[in-house]
View 1 (cartoon, one colour):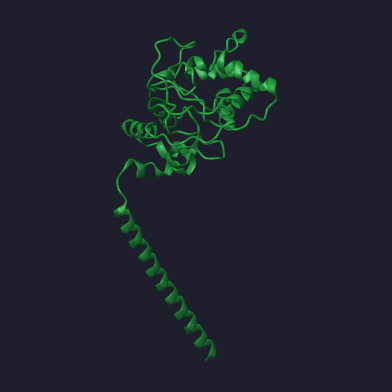
View 2: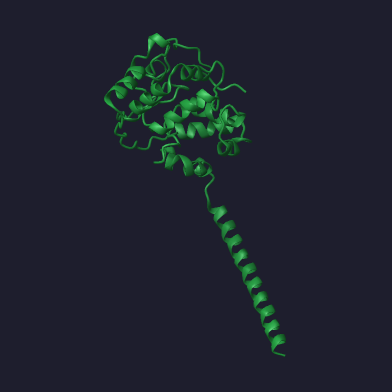
Length: 248
């Protein structure tokens, strides 16, 4: 008798737990549907997932490996989205996000972030020996003619803030990110449209060169009201497929 009562109570409790779960799920679904209908259909909402890695408004986060995308030239951002989608750049998360998006939508995303100009954080204090820092400054501003390494300024602009329509700025990026991207070019984890000039430059530079340049660039403050320079008519030191729109 006691066993039968206990079993009946157990069944009763299970029923009510199930019933409560159904009611709760229904309430959550209703709330989600209600919230979905109240969210505006805007680019701010559509690209909200980007802020998880790239920070609010694409201003970057403190971990160093997710770059600032706000204020970058729209052509550069578009090219990178196409490169992730088409496999020239390897990042499973980015490929998953943009893998099925058409060119027109990728261009909308690029133009959205290109128009944003949130404040930059203070630059990092250089934690390298003075000779290393000076080596980085020399390559960034003058290059190394003995090894046919062009100056960063030759392509990325005198202020190193990029050049419209498709050359990115280098100031405001973390040292870790710059190091990681040079490494990706050296091992073939990152490609651009042929001819891939950055892959060629990365192969000409030693690991010490890369570390020095990364430390120098990360230490530079961002000028007030900084923005990419206007398109240059000067021929770049190397032919670069990434200077124009990405090709399928």
